[in-house]
Image 1 (spheres, helix red, strand yellow):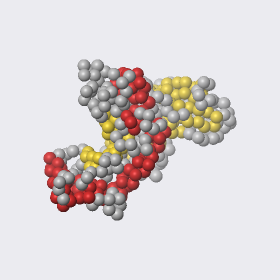
Image 2 (cartoon, one colour; image 1 turned 135 degrees about the vertical axis):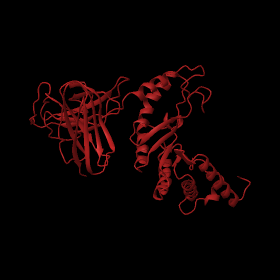
Image 3 (tube, rainbow, N blue to C red; image 1 turned 120 degrees about the vertical axis):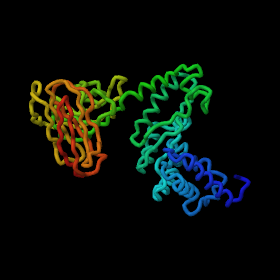
Image 4 (cartoon, helix red, strand yellow; image 1 turned 90 degrees about the vertical axis):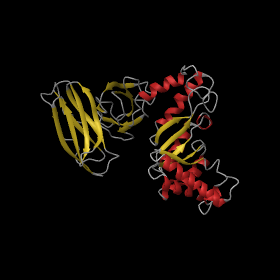
Length: 402
């Protein structure tokens, strides 16, 4: 390329993008431009150079990729953009130029050891990820590795750093930059030796990925005047089969007043002290392991105890109740009764009959259950929820108004 004039370079670029687009028409993703900030190519002038936007050559590359790779998601990839605020701002400038033109579908962040392992604090990593996520584009950690010779040190780094990236709501996934000894970019980033022995970090990673993520608390958060017997609600965590709730009168949880395990994502606790600052947190568990506790939330109680409808014993028959409130925004509660242990499937559908969410999928003991349906990610409209339990089935309508 360096021996060609700009016109010939441009022809070769177009030919290469066209050829690869035809060869791989069903490719899911393509890093159209890799490392535009740190390693711009010598032939960038063939694509328009810096131009009026300072990044005309990147825009042109994406325009060609969109033309010749019409069915592929187009990404921009770079390193040192989550540990360096200046680079993060520059990266965002390019992303927003592409986004304004409808040319970019995802953001690639490399996540090498020199970026995430000592290169920045956890807070810096989170803040810079937040900046990228604010674009509304999915983030992919494309080249993750931790270069530590000592097994225990590598394990500790994985336990500290990996969840920060993996559990960020804007991150869709993480690609390890090699994992087999002698087949990695740096000597001590491997997780599996050449004799197939697993390093402790790999053993931990397997359990971590199979376990549920830490829950996100919904309500009450930061409020005052709450009932002394408040209803605590949190987001469900994928694959979780139970949750552990802790309620305390101090933020260090040395004065725990509630410590219980339940299978639902909401619970009304017994009356707490009046006019008191209360702290609460939740962890999720399944057969593979237990998540870390959620971020701690707090609220302040008032003097009142709200009336609660009493229910005792086993229901006499299968039943599905109307959701409440209805209409709702953005969440509502659905209750159902089981007179005997049954396999339960509770799903929500749109008006075209397309499934939009599974709320329950598993075996439940006899009893009355309530499930919180969070529709924050759905548009306003009419939906239907369907319960299949034993040999019974029910369908009811709900209305989401935003």
